[in-house]
Image: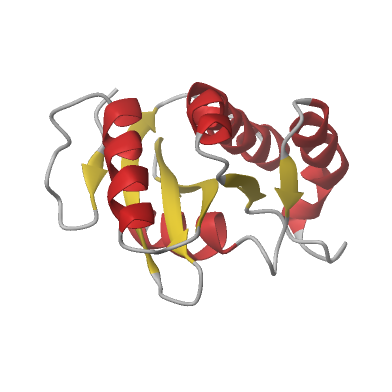
Length: 157
């Protein structure tokens, strides 16, 4: 799985090593960190572009992110696509959560799903929330889910 920085620079080490180095560097610089993970997707013809982001927030001092993008030709409903986004976020969260526990860094999983029932994505809200919470992660949906609805969104548009 290839991860890159927002600048486009490809991460040469594993994402786990990269995150650990970032945590050590940022905490040595006096920052309290929180990690937010989210995925967004955009259908472009017959291809769906997915972007998953790991956002490291420095309390009151901005943040930075790592990005993984992939494409799929699988045709799915809006609800299935929303749940695929959540699955990608959970897989990423699961792969780094033990490291975050070691360094006592909080973790949230963000879903690009609207809490307003008049939006199509809302059909997946209960399933997504149950999935994320059952995995033991903190769940955020729109408008609080900036990792997916702003950061990942920027990568697929």
